[in-house]
Length: 157
Image 1 (cartoon, helix red, strand yellow):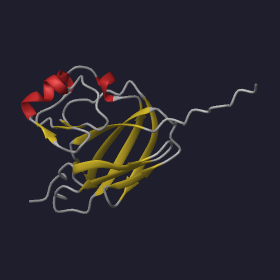
Image 2: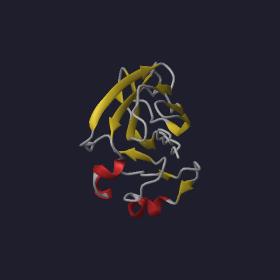
Image 3: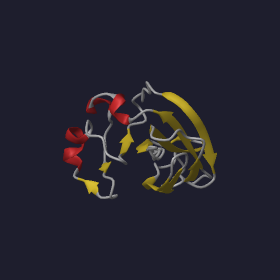
């Protein structure tokens, strides 16, 4: 049956540096139509998104080691910041982003290189698929770029 695409799954930040993130996902079902993948990058962490009441049905939290945390713990874990969290958002509810939009990306594959980021800064990455019938549920990841190394100077005697 032709319909909207399913959400991406298995998303992971497979590499990160002071200014770059590499995001890789597995595509969901395409709904019988050609799909495109979109990534919105917001400055700030998902802890600013509010309580777990903003999270739609099917919320799943994935920790920094890409291990799925029990879905019953999703509401309790929503306020805990981890290096990488993935939350499936109900497309019928509005996802409010108090953070500033950094960039938009589109691709025929659910893999993105995000560059020109600020060192030591938290980001929220929102991924979704689209086709001619509509948009999938969104998946949100949190990431922090590596901090700049401290500069050490030798004291003269």
